[in-house]
Length: 626
Image (cartoon, rainbow, N blue to C red; front, top):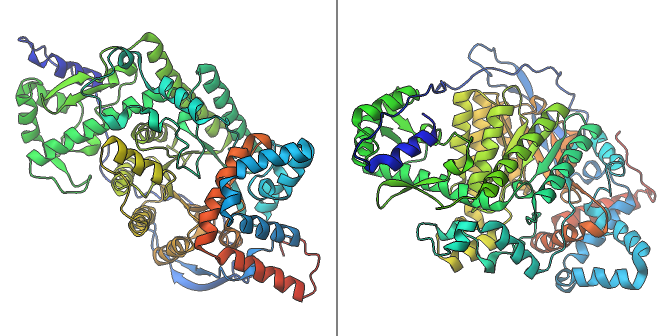
């Protein structure tokens, strides 16, 4: 039975004559982890020729029970070796980095960066302003203006083992008032406009004008605001061009997208609330069976007790419910877990039918909204269609698609839609990658549940791990509106969460070569932690299962030694016309202020290399792959 039929049954539960619940064939899902091995087509690279890499033999943990052990080189990377770390940079580039990073430490320059850029444009004129920007901030953090102009930088980085995640970073430069108006117009449904005080809607998943400008408190993520369907189509075309550009510049590139660019965010808010309420309902039933306090995957509902609970709620007779579970191929082990429960929401033929939620007070299902217009229905379907189009283009062009994470009131829906894309497109290799924000308290549960689903169904799990971009905004919104803070209590807790999630996925790779992960971090300790775990588990970099990612223009002392040592490492590469990427450059300045004030390491390494070159007579130094 599909979710829609189940929902209908629940809604009709109070009728005197309950109709027999229809049984539809379900999908068989294996609960045994796949142990198949992906054959390696490439020979091990010779890593001992690079001065930045030290190698010693180590036993490789067998990829399957039938594979004999073999030796690989244990790899240790010296991130203090500036000669290797900056061999891709000439002296002018080193000086530019030092200048830009120093400027980022001055509060007045960072706080007034937009005003100063506007003044510079007015004083020097557009042409001179663009030259100045390309010599400083734009040249440091942006690859170029279009698909053709970015190719030399991408090709140079590739020569040193560093790939690209392309990101067209053009943004609207809206005022706060304009942003708030766009957000309220796009996040409030017609039903809510007619009845604004809908009691059963949760405050977290409703739009609030004081937080309508989603750029507030966010320094490291792009923000899209909905205008109309035509604009969403244009943004989809931009993503398609980005995918094609990635395919044209490298054989194994990534391209990044955001769901909020592809449709009206009203649907993301509403679907997120539905998913959260259904999960809460599962937790309530688990608590009734004495299973609260367990991890998400440990909670298994005893089928007999669940049947009795649903019977008491008026879903149907005990026989009806037992027949329904049997028809859905669920509960064959005598229990229902969260993955089985999530599979109830699987019917997207009529989107508004998904927006049915359990009322925990009455025990009945009810619509999230009393009214859904035909246009709202069409808008929701168009968003799903755009996502599908992008995934198909990524597959056709051999490009991996990375879905960026967003705010927690959107994220449940974004993750679920990404998961559905993975189920469809990751059957032969990892094409779609979801992003997990490890500053969230629920990050580990989210990762483990999704890994388990990929294991049962046999598709390739793809993840990007980040710490998170919306911490200050999320905390302020939770406090002001009145719901639980979703963020870990401190930075140390976030670090522990990141390493916990990372270690779990690495262990999955160790036992099942279908998992893949990008360790997206500027934290050198986390990179060293990853290398240590890979050595312990015998995970070779040439398997291309573990990737590393940093932003263009930042942490080259991490990216390039990794690339030259044979690890798959990628720079997040923004591009776009100078005037149109100013909002992005503004955020980079703000992010680097905190980064540079907190650590002098990158600047000290740049100075060290520049002094070494000058003292050795390398007044003019050009990049060399030798």
